[in-house]
Length: 180
Image 1 (cartoon, one colour):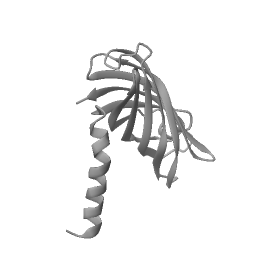
Image 2 (cartoon, rainbow, N blue to C red):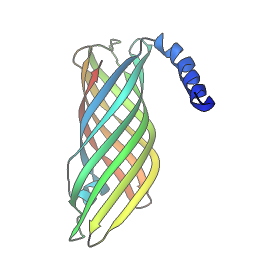
Image 3 (cartoon, one colour):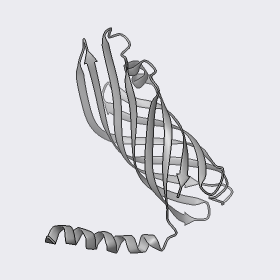
């Protein structure tokens, strides 16, 4: 075995030991994306899809942290004001979410969710006015959720990320989470 991969494997094993003792749970989220503002103009209100995988760490009664890796994808839609141009939008997200259950029970009931992290945006316009934008920016989102059962939750949240000086990604996400 080469030294570098062996070193990475040893480091990952060492870091995973304390996390295993914290009752962490692995989960996934699937959501629909309703663009607003600039994204709505680019895609003519084309609805998108997204998903994420996460690890939930209980911090205290009613407080969880969820680091995640996710994505959003809005398929090609007619760009308003640019006849013959279609634009698609995608992002890859590395976020840290915080969940607060006011009732103190993370297995049942309502909760607030907030997240911040990095987003790699990829926007491609084809047709009469082609262009490509790639940008890594800060993204934030927040909203409300309801833990239906110990494994299933539903969430509604708004998101915001400044892609460049003339383009800001905003919209709503509605989805479900599943813990395994």
